[in-house]
Image (cartoon, rainbow, N blue to C red; front, side):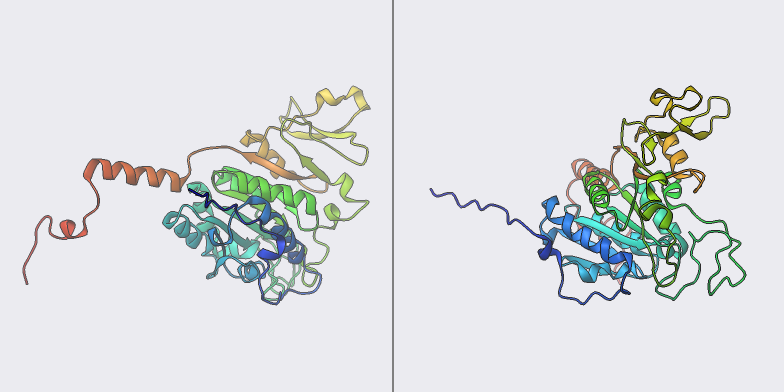
Length: 341
């Protein structure tokens, strides 16, 4: 008997590129994110027909059109509900949700929160440009205090939302950060997110060069980012700086983070905190560090394996069938009190 087994087709970046014209402003950070996503997806070994991209409304939400997979371009803020429904209906699918700081944290904040706490096995990418780009430059939930925009001509008086902190507060099982133009780092974070069993939340700082240009220059530009980025890695000391001679220390008296310089006041590497991505308290401290007094933490801030919603739901279904038998709709309709009309 001959062997009819065929090897899986090896996909390339081109396989994930759709035939749609990409319609973002020239220079937008979304181009870089899209290119990195299309570069990484073939490495995951997931067939095109088993992948779904879901989005809401906004510049980032055009993503499904540019991915040669199944996709849903849904309504403002409601993408998490669609993504959860897709995953529950077909747990075998690899579900990716793309949202922005406006779509996901304003009208969609409630839906996002429940998606994170339920821990379905989906991947959530939040593009954070601290502005409403699609509607031409209004302030967003992540805009800083004092931000002057078309909707806040005297400066915003709102306190901004920190996406990573919100995700941790919603009991997300995976929280990470990256930047649009850091291709290698972003690729690594996408792979980590895909490998995580549960809802992975990846915040991506993304430059809107038309309506909020330069919002992240401090951590994007050469000559600045070396002293402003803190690339966190599990079980490695939290060091940063051009010479890797600065680090984070937990002050034993105030229990607050502080920046130290190795060699000053007797400080050594032994005084520097070691990152533990399973420690949610440390993750929150890293997420909330104010810039520019502190560096911006990038990488996997928190990761914890726990049961997924879709996995637990499948177990409940199996248990229910074992207890009550296979579902029978006609039997259900004829059970209890019935009337003949």
